[in-house]
Length: 447
Image (cartoon, rainbow, N blue to C red; front, top):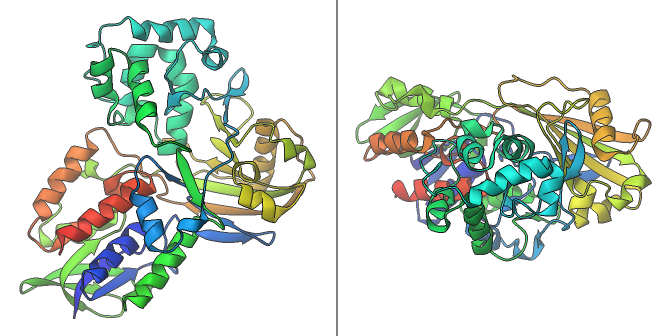
């Protein structure tokens, strides 16, 4: 017997287990994979310990910063070098405007916006300032809102590359960012709403990481759970739930576990497969986000030409841009000073991301990655490769459908009072801020 079984040892499951244990509950964590952490993981390439998945977290909320501080890592928080990013378009590569939110410009007539979308595109975007606030005020998705207020060129050349990089979905498939519609009604324009959101954001960088890699967060969580006597069983999946009196029995490959509460911190399709046989989770299948497989190719290069960071911290790629298969490139040694310092002069780390919405699992080889990196950085890199690694995340960026938040709310209402709860990126949304906050809320619901 144990008080709570947490199924899944990604960051959501680890955070929830920690909160439950700190509240005095006996907790057992089951993880099907060989190691905890999910998509927050590390690997070693050419002797460098690097992030193999997520590398940063948003600072719009202090929820992750609080966790980092609780784990004793506050002194190791670092922010990216303020070089800015670029966007690779069908007709060239230009700096990404700096005054936007998800690529939506806060100053449509700014010089960097005109450079990206052209004078005609910037003029069309500027019409947003004189349109009635009611235009687009009831948009059901981000793409419709931007297209209506600022036009197609802003959508295709700025917003879509950013959103596809962050959410693995076209803006037409993404819910409107919270705060945009209230800001539109308040200021009378989408640009005004964006400017207001930026002004209200915490001072400093929009993201932060950890010196030595974000994967250190998982290592610290696992160590803290061990100190709290929480058992984390890897290689042990939950196969079935069964009611047992006022509690539950969780069947696993190693035998059943009796428990009063169960927290499912697993992908949506796995959670529903466990819930439905016991008469729960009978909601619209659309509650499960569309899988969005992501392949990351890490290259370590001997390329002193990259010391000057010719494309800042990285490049986003617009759909239809010729000659490139990747959807984004991060120049890791230009973005993070700690990586540059441990790599040494002339040695550079570049990471490319593959997998666009609706394309299916990407197939990538190192030759393609080198070619893409050369094009995006504007520097020939053939013959410069020291080492590489390819990492595949089958559900790395789940793509929620419009209306997702309401469906999750319905599911959680159905689970209330049953001793079961769900959490994880499929339910909370993309990013550690959403995942950590949601995991803590789910833990509280079981106390």
